[in-house]
Length: 123
Image (cartoon, rainbow, N blue to C red):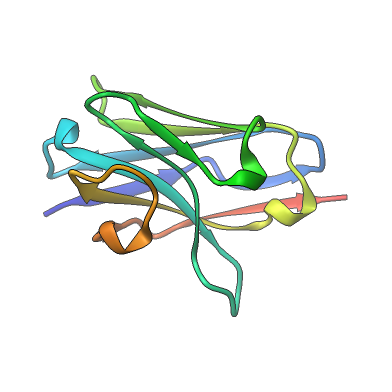
């Protein structure tokens, strides 16, 4: 059974930084794309950033380019999302997701989801 456990969310002031972690188990890590998505109440879940583990290819949603960095640690089956220069509009629940053989961030290709971690950016 594929399991994804997120951590690292919290409350931070605008301009600050957070690092989210997603630990994956029950899968062959190299076979997967791992993505970060976010969702506000009443809104569609949207992609933030994704990485294909085997070759490290990455994708970033336009609004986070230059501020967020996704990376993977294959030794620990962990994907990180380093979030810098956080803005009020980055406040959301952030979800980690895994999609076998996935490149890019189409959410319909990600079939395994974590429980989410809340990120709140204050002024």
